[in-house]
Image (cartoon, rainbow, N blue to C red; front, side, top):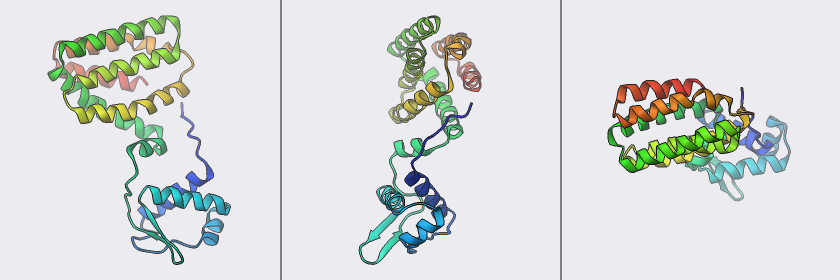
Length: 217
């Protein structure tokens, strides 16, 4: 199921301009076309063009020089991580999740502490409870809490922060994708197997079970 991402006209125009910057159609230090030219090129009004430029200025792609024009100053920008997640495709989010959670789970199997295992068990119990009650949002929250406990057990604070940044977008995507707890019921056993693999510090089994869980989404 495709997750629908609703963007304003300004955000769509900003994405198109960003694409032209990254493809070198608009090169570094070059002057952006005028507002009327951009309005004609993208078929939008002046307010959408101005808001798109404001977005790209804030994200570090453009600089506005009053009385002169708007200039390209970066191919990559300096946009916050949240902004990158917001405009990313769901397939990109899943890819990041696979890469991030695989490494996190492997490290958790080596570094987990008793406190981390307790948090995992507690989240799993809640996940099962909400599955049985068909309480979708609470179930998703418990699922993410379980994976966050795994992240806390990996011993790398940066990975924990990255998982935390991505998890709220996973939550939003799951709320759009699912109408019941059926898929969570189907993967409850796999999550319990993941917990046991981490508890036993079996890195290979941890990786295998986690991959199966993500593929089930």
